[in-house]
Image (cartoon, rainbow, N blue to C red):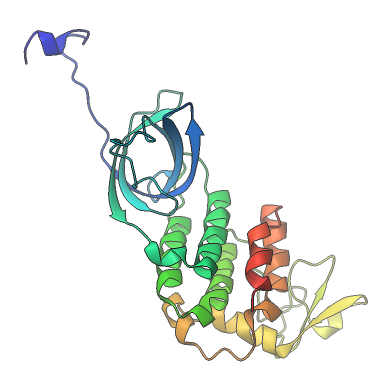
Length: 260
């Protein structure tokens, strides 16, 4: 090492670059004239935010890479109590199939839910795997199955958050619900007829069957399942559970399930 390259460095110390990490881009926002703040999620570190300097410049190495839902191998500067720098970003996967309106809406809704479930610098591997697998499913599944796949992903996320009620047993007495379940305002789960004082809301057998089928089968099976009712008929029940778990009512979800 020459004296010129060693200027300003303490004797005996060498700069160490952090290893790259696999991330999915969730958000971008402009910073000053030429840079962007990029928020990603990773399996090992949870949510990571970094400043991509010069990302708007025509010759930037970040151009076309730090786009929404792209999968990257990214290198961030060490955390020193401020905003990290996004130092490098190698494109792994550009999800062009998700640019179709219905798929983009579904993927954006999933990304918002997973963003909520992840904290800065806290690993949530189950949530990251759900996001990654969900994006893969939404890219490849038939368009007619997109809404049902989203319902299945919501059930998986609720389970990861510990907020999914038992779909087979009464939350009060643990007796099997059979084909009939009920919801009451003061009870987060489903109840049997005995424990459903008025006012109660009956859950149709078809809705119960759909939610149970999605919950009890693997994600790879969802696109090929013989769905007998539209997803929008079952959507209100997971919406209540998501609202209780996240204290949010995602606008994108309402738009997604309003589509026929």
